[in-house]
Amino acid sequence: MNPTAAVLVIGNEILSGRTKDANLPHIAETLAGIGVRLREARVVPDVEEEIVAAVNALRARYDYVFTTGGIGPTHDDITSACVAKAFGVALERNPEAVARLERHYAPGQLNEARLRMANIPAGGVLIDNPISQAPGFQLGNVFVMAGVPNIMRAMLDGVVPRLVGGPELHARTVACELGEGVIAADLSALQDRHPNLEIGSYPYFRAGYFGVSLVLRGTDEAEVAGAADALAGIIQRLGGTPTVTVGSKG
Amino acid sequence: MNPTAAVLVIGNEILSGRTKDANLPHIAETLAGIGVRLREARVVPDVEEEIVAAVNALRARYDYVFTTGGIGPTHDDITSACVAKAFGVALERNPEAVARLERHYAPGQLNEARLRMANIPAGGVLIDNPISQAPGFQLGNVFVMAGVPNIMRAMLDGVVPRLVGGPELHARTVACELGEGVIAADLSALQDRHPNLEIGSYPYFRAGYFGVSLVLRGTDEAEVAGAADALAGIIQRLGGTPTVTVGSKG
Image (tube, rainbow over all chains, first blue to last red; front, side):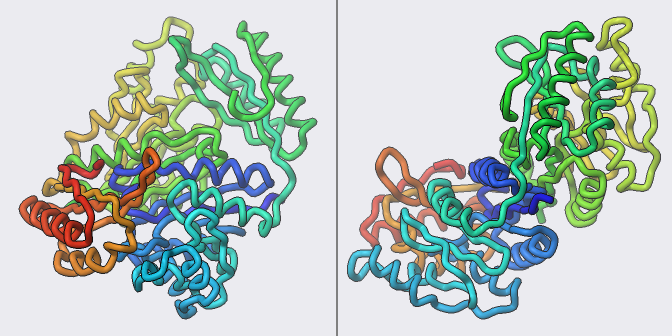
């Protein structure tokens, strides 16, 4: 079985529409690459009870939880305190985190606001931030990361070796110019014959043409490839021209 | 008080990283424009129990719930059936929806798979789809829309007149080249003096420069503007050069 994960995006700016989240697709692809299935994502505002409730709901349910956002120096950065509260542990000034900030800032620049970024829940294991030093942390199965995309990516790179992955997920995409409704019945029958595969249907409109990308996923590459070939045959019988590609982006 | 809302994004393709959600920012901005506060978003896979549980959790908690995805003709399109189950009502073939599909498809093209798109929970009020006719629907405070972005936008345009909005939300952005940590203490004090405002701090890196955008939001435009001016004064005293713009994108 593949381990499961959830992402918790923390920040008013995503819910106001000001900022487009750029982290979820990257985390999703990274996890898929090591056989961890992302099963849920939530976006919550910078409100303590919302964050605490979401952290506790998700960590009880999934093998891994990844949070983004809310670990900076300003008043609206409350993620670390909320995770401490969710776990019922103290929020402490972490000496190693302080040392990293001291090396990063020029003398006199490390004020109390910036030192807040060294407040880590008791028992938290730091996550390196090679860009601006202020660390994230892991507490139990929860990984707390920055929201700024380049910092989040660097943190995630550091976290991946700590994760236990699962069997690799293989994908094939079969694209054609037929309408979804034309192929739906045969596709449903194919899904029934392959309960271990996940078959998705995604219509597209591109350069004046419409069509559909049918994505097959599973851990048994031979089954994925065989089902993709069978689907290509179905499409030909229905009068379409299938294109089979490896991966899910075709 | 402003009415509240949640968005429920339904689809494996978002969680696998294959598809980037493009709907959440648009819904967020549209709702903000009519004074409805988006308070939560969730992404769930095409799994019945997940969708039913999320619909019921969100509709109990927020004034409006907007779902996207899962209302097409293929086997993985199960949103309508799940919403019926969440409300405990029957899923029925809707005569008006059938009539719309009959007008849209050429003779002989409206097969059983496509007719599934006319299955609407009992009591559902149709949401127009001017692009490909297959309708969405409103059931209670839940609005079920397509996932394809241009169709979702057209559906949302049709839905907005049905919503009861709230007081307009005004925003000012004060940008400067200071670090977040330099201004954090004064910003926190400003937030304390204006509990009715929501003040967010968003660092940026642009064309080799870094700085921070400070966004102030509230329903009292005079208070928003006054607090923005006060913040500009604080930034000047700290040695920065503030730029104040109307809205939240500065």
